[in-house]
Image (cartoon, rainbow, N blue to C red; front, side):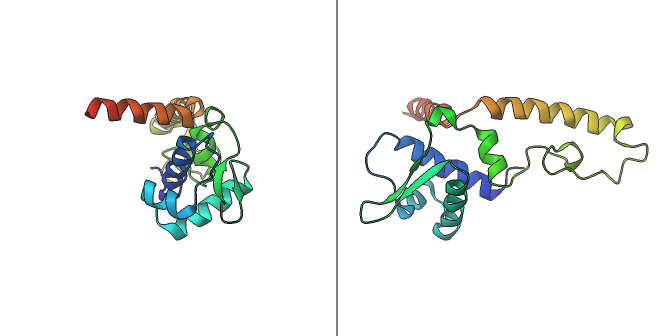
Length: 148
């Protein structure tokens, strides 16, 4: 399951992607209001994203946050991993958060569930690794048009 932190990081970056190319960076309060993210939580997420090179910040009256890269160069898999969220559904198939499974008596090599979850992880990573912020903005626009 996607953590709140990862979900909020994605939402904040989508908000920044919509503003990409605009000369005025977005303030934390603007992002929090537009994307319905608690402001204090958003502050820590943006600092982490800045420290990992996904966003830049500008100080002062005209300050705020903006993307450090093109929206088409920031992928969901990156964001989820940077915000500390596992992609795998089970820890025994996770690349970054691996934990052995105590329920498997014959070991992971003989566990059918482990085998299936490994396939699920691979398919999930493949989708997340090719889905960029630009793709999310386009999907959001397309979905909004369908609702009109």
